[in-house]
Image (cartoon, helix red, strand yellow):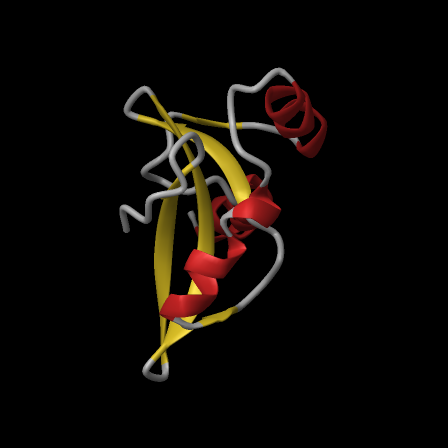
Length: 95
């Protein structure tokens, strides 16, 4: 059993897809969606995110969460890492 778990852990870690997301898009797919006007560029919503706290990583992901396109990004707020959702069409932070 432990051997199976040891073999599965790297595969689980490699997925790194947020559990709340129905689907996350590759950087190329995200760029195409921005170019087609389906989502705002991440750069246009960074100001709102920085108002909450310090961005942990610039590896924000564009994902479908319940039929909405959102950027998922981790932010440090008051010493804690929080997961922030930003609506990719309106720029509104939805946590």
